[in-house]
Length: 254
Image (cartoon, rainbow, N blue to C red; front, side):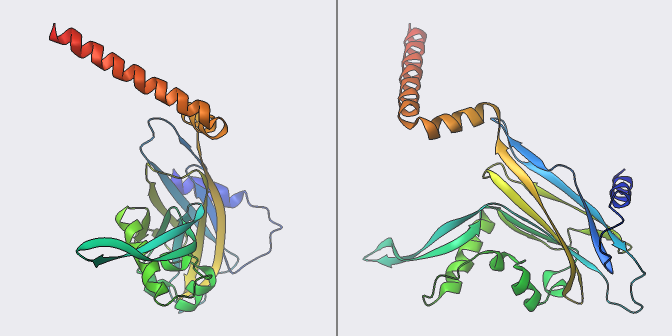
């Protein structure tokens, strides 16, 4: 079924597009994710095909595929902790200009084998390259970026999934990426890269929209637009819940 869908997408492309040696035809199992009160994560199936105007060159290196999914960018603060007078305390702070709230990289083989450092710098594909810290010039900035990556990898919002992309006969590819329950609203940029000998030969980009719906959306808008009233309502609900629990406990004791 998936292979048939890929072929139908490929046939639907306009014939007037500029020809490339190897070109990506992409499909997504969904292009929107709805966050509801019971949302506990989601999985996105990313599949596609390589369209060619001519057979690949003889004795060419194997084709490789890299897939990245990046959540909305936001500044991040990283602080160094040191033990002083027997107490752990924050000392130096480092502000990252922009870091993805979620970032996943899936490849057909180990990333170091399918992408050169130069191409990684040009396209910002690996996790460290996806984090922008160009405005910082303090000593040891790389250590702070590495710490941020480690923290978010432990939280399972930064992932490197080497060998997670299946590529059949250098034509059909597919992978699935799990999105966590604590998704941040916004556009999630999905990029696909074809590489040979570590060089990018084609790329494709699309967006997956993530947004709250239903009661989650109403509560979020209410809290943002009428913060004071939202606070009073929350306080009233807390008082009512406390009173109900107290009354139930008193009735149980009788």
